Length: 316
Ligand code: TMO
Image (cartoon, rainbow, N blue to C red):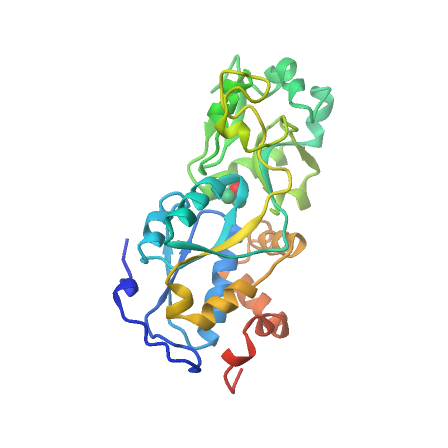
């Protein structure tokens, strides 16, 4: 991947000078799921409207952190508690990455099933129902175990399967678009399925369903084996039920591009808006670019209000 060595450039920010305080491009990292791509485009277009140069770099959400820490990547518009909390906390501690604000949206990432399988698995959403009904989810790849479709993102699913003694085998999809395709095909055919899902996403608007209720998340579940139903293993719990969604930035951003950083901090979305944007791309087939453009056209007043008054230029 290309590197943007702006960490090495001196900051040209002057007190009181408006954007762009530095011509170096702001490197925005894009990952492998749709809402992240849309919000990245929206943030990038807002920065451009303020006069900044921007560049997009596609990266995995695990691999991005080292590059952010060293100032090669500068903005991450979606940090999800369920998937990213641990690494994010480590980066904050190391000091090269900073928290750029929490969205209004409340998130959840976990095993999920469509309501049409409830009759085949009495007792759901309680995870203990899976102890007896797992054969319903078996496929040629997993028989006699049930199949759980995992995403390409870093989840503790294998550890949880062992810790809770689940009779499931995880089949991991390769990338975000494979996830979309696999899941939507199975749901369309009304076949039994249990898979890694998250909210806000398009699924909830298309097919009624629920998250499996694993033992409630507590920090100790990830750090103290003796915690929970299995005294010998970590991860005998679900992901947080009311997780946060944050933005992250390279620690040098507030100094190098102060107005962009303040705007990023103020950028906000709720659950319904994110679901709707994802639906436009993944279900209606509209491009990420066009979805972002349409949103920007329809919400000009809102996103311009995210730009602090002293950072606004005449022709905004
Ligand atoms: C990080 N994700 C939203 C795919 O769970």
